[in-house]
Length: 107
Image 1 (tube, rainbow, N blue to C red):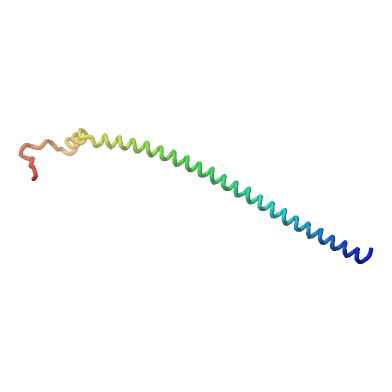
Image 2 (image 1 turned 135 degrees about the vertical axis):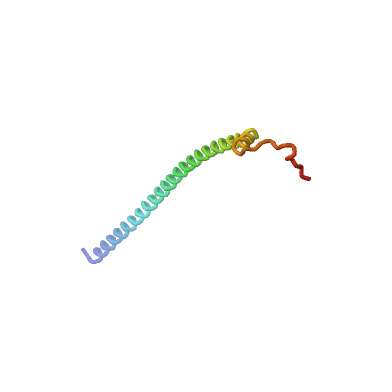
């Protein structure tokens, strides 16, 4: 084999190695990008599902609080009825109807 032929063979071999490295680097970059895309999509989906669970819990809590609010409004109405207030005033505090001379009208 002549020197020129050997030189051409070495150059061809170097080009093949360089081309192989270039192809490997490109493939590695492509796999990395696809992996990152899959990871980000999965991460977004997990966050979306967690947000759905949180919304469900908050809706359930809102429903419970609205029910409690209605119960409290009913209890407030019962406790503030004039008949009950008069009964408590007479029994617990000993209040009674005023005598005719005890009433004074202010101007």
